[in-house]
Image (cartoon, rainbow, N blue to C red; front, side, top):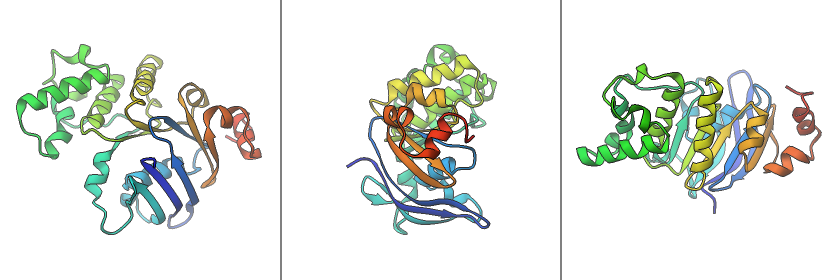
Length: 250
């Protein structure tokens, strides 16, 4: 059984429909790209997977999202435990107003780790994983806000991984980055997928073609088709997917 199974997921906003009857199983240890035109439900889908949709005004959710077999929308579900399994990388880096070190140590501390030596190891390990250690190891206690935008995004990646999630949710994580910084992030994803399930919302088809093992195509709140990336990106079955891939739908 995969980490994530979605069954008959519907999201309604006050004045519009967000998602309509979405059912899909996300493959483990792969990069799943979520593609489709603006406003089609990509980010809504992602926010449902860690219940961040809960803080969206007027959003009502029906259906099931199973994480390791547990329906996260069951009233008895522990949302904190859920979010520990789901790392998040947003479109714009959201560093905490504290030092580089404390940004990475923040999650482990919340989950009860206090020993300085253990925190030091966690910080160093995850800054290395995100390819940032070599650039910041001598200024760990400087403000994270002093970093460049690209460095901040890699710091956010390190912070998200420091709580040992099973899944990494990425909402257009390179959209605000320069090409070199974006390449750093993409390279990390390719390395990380052996240990994590990565779900990547992207509006850049070239990025989906470079990175994706599996693809979901959304259109107007509907999951139109999904499957292995090579199949969906080169031989889609639905005309809407074909139109999107050639630029008729944008």
